[in-house]
Amino acid sequence: MCYRPSPVPDEKIVSSIGIGIGPERLLAPAQLGVDVSENRSALNNKSALLSQRAAIVLLLGALTALGAGVLTCFNGGTLASAALVGSAAFGAGVTFFHSVID
Picture 1 (cartoon, rainbow, N blue to C red):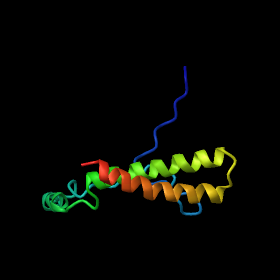
Picture 2 (cartoon, rainbow, N blue to C red):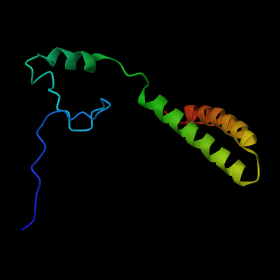
Picture 3 (cartoon, rainbow, N blue to C red):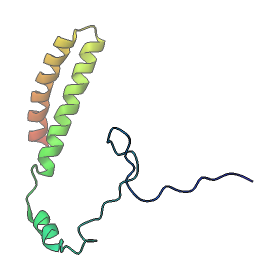
């Protein structure tokens, strides 16, 4: 027969220094009876910080910069030269992808 300890109750376990180490169960606002439907619709009406096109152009520019910096570093360059080459490649990549992507 295998010994199984009793499960810990669903309450906060606090160590001697006051840091919670156990499962802390918090109720969601909807479980407390708060109407959150207006909050959800307000979040959906906000415009995005970046458009999808801008995010893709910046992502491709960052990947270009990372690739150029890594190749420079592997070719024997210093980290400073890799950072300079990467920043120049970022500017060139963003300019290129901005003109290419519609």
